Amino acid sequence: MHLRETVSVAFDALRSNKLRAALTSLGVIIGSASIVLVVTVALTSKKFVISQIEGVGSNLIWAEMVHAAGKAEPLSHEITVGDMEAMGAMPGVVAVAGTRELPMSVVVSGVERPVNLIGVTEGFQTIRRLVIYRGRYFDSEDMASRGKVCLITKDLSERVFGLENPIGRPIRMGELTFTVIGVFRERVATFGLSEIQKESVIIPLGLMKYYTGEDVLRVLYAQAVSPEAVAGVEREMTQLLKSRHPLDAEYDVQTLVAILGAARTISLALTVVLLVIAAIALLISGIGIMNIMLVTVKERTREIGIRKAIGAAYKEILYQFLIEAFLISGGGAVLGILIGLAIPVSIQPLIPGNLRVPVSGTSVIVAFVVSCSTGLFFGYLPASQAAKLQPIESLRYE
Image: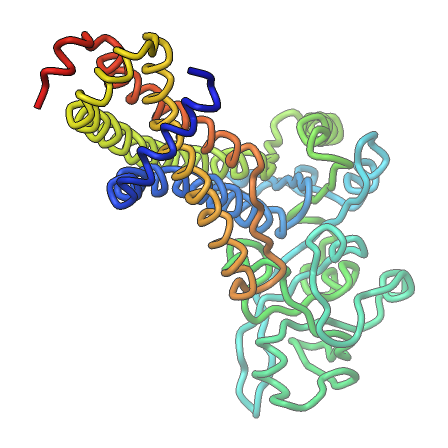
C-alpha cells in the first residue's frame, strides 16, 4: 500500500467518526491555545511592567548622602552642583540633574496648604521624563537668572486655580511669590515614592538657597547612554563621590536594574507556571488520544485482519494509525493556535494607552510541534498494537 493510500484510509476512518475525533482533539485545542496565550500574556505583562518602571527614568542612576541617625552631617559631605557637573563629563553619561526638597506651604483661599517644594536643575525634565500639560519647562535663562518662576503639578493646579488657566498666575510660598510657567505630571506615577508628591512645586535649584541658605543637592541623577552602560556609570558615580568628599562620607548609589530584574524574574515564574498548566492540558489530551486509539484498534480488529490478509505490511498498519493520531493532534493544534492568535487581536482595541499585544512566532511553532508530538507519542502504542495483530486471530474477532 502506498503512502497516499495509507493517508486516504486514515482520513476515511476519521470521517466515519467525526464526533469522536472532534472530542478527542478538544484537549489538544485547549492545550495549544493555552501555550500561545500564555506566551502572549507573559510578553505583554513583561513589556508593560518594564515600560512602567522605565517610565520613571530610562537607564537611571541616582545617589543620595546617607544620614546617620541623630547626627548632623558636615557640609563637606553634601552632594554639590560641582559633583553633578563632574558626573556629566563622565563617559557613558548623556544627562545629569540634581534636586533638593523642602516642605513648604501655599495659600489657598486664605488658608495655608502644605506642598512639596523641589529645586531642580535644567536636565531634570529629560531624566525624569516629566509630561508638561500646559506652558513650558525651565530654560537656560530661567536657571541662570534665578527668575522666580515655577511649575506645579496638575493636582495642585486644580486645587489652587480650579478650572482657570494657571499660566502666568502668581503663587506665594513663604516669603517669595512665583509666577507659574507650566503644569506637569510624572509620566509614570511613583505614588509619592520619589521627590514628586501629589501636590508639588518645582523651581530653579538656585532659588532654594533663599529657603535653605545652602547650595547643595539631596539627589544626584545621571542617565546612562544605554542599559548596558548602567553598571559602569554606577561605579563611576560611586568613585566620583568618594574622590570629591571626605573618606567618612557615605552615599547610597542606586539603579532600576534590581527592580527590572525582579520584574523579569516574576514574569518568568508566572510564565513557567502557566506553561506547566498548558502542558498538563496537553498531557490529558494525549492520554485521551491514546485511549480513543486503543478503542479504535479494538473496534477495527477485523478490518486490520482483512488488510493484513491481502498483503498490508507491519509499517503500513503502523503508519495508518500514526497518521490518524497526527491528524487529530495536528488539526487540534491548528485550531488551538488560531484561537490563541484571535483572542489577542480581538482584545487589542480594548487595551488602553499605547500598549501593544505582541504575538510570538516561536510560541506558535512550539505549540504546533508539542501538540503534534504529543499525539504521535501517545498514538504510537495503539498503532504498534494494531500493527502486531495476527491476521488469523483478527479475522476470527467478532
